Length: 139
Image (cartoon, rainbow, N blue to C red):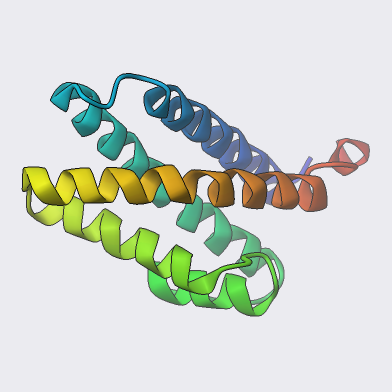
């Protein structure tokens, strides 16, 4: 297995774990402010891992993207993301949560995360089928 394949496989594993942890948080009692904070934190690192994996995938296709926003736009252009606006909103929410904290904003973002999660998960499975199935022959 090449170093690039190993890094890509590790990216998929890391994202799979992050998505599972986010799902776990979403299944908790969202009335508890600690759970809300934890869910938002898990969302932040899931988005971070997501855009970096997309950047690595784009590079493997010969497309260079520098910023998270540029990466999401390019991933949409190649057809990996179904809803460009939702992904750009996820990035905006991630940026807002990491720069300022406000309980009302946190609750609003939590509601957004609940709506984003199915999109995040289905996109992951689509990319995993495209890039990971059949990769075992290369090892």
